Image (cartoon, rainbow, N blue to C red):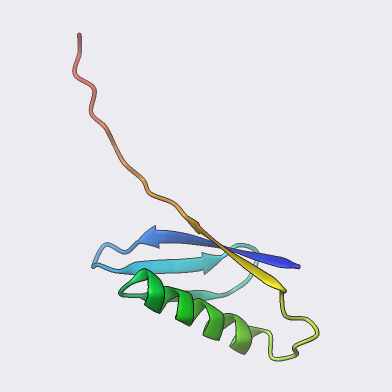
Length: 71
């Protein structure tokens, strides 16, 4: 089983991660801190190692609005 996290920039700085299809949410000030927090959150959420996902995918989503001037 693979668990996918959607990663976004937090408005107050840093990053946050939300697992798709699971009630797992965590945050971190840097990518490295977020990665460590994701691993810890998954371990805590899936206490039984037999049910724990074998892979975690961290999918970074960046929203950007680009204003287009009228031609």
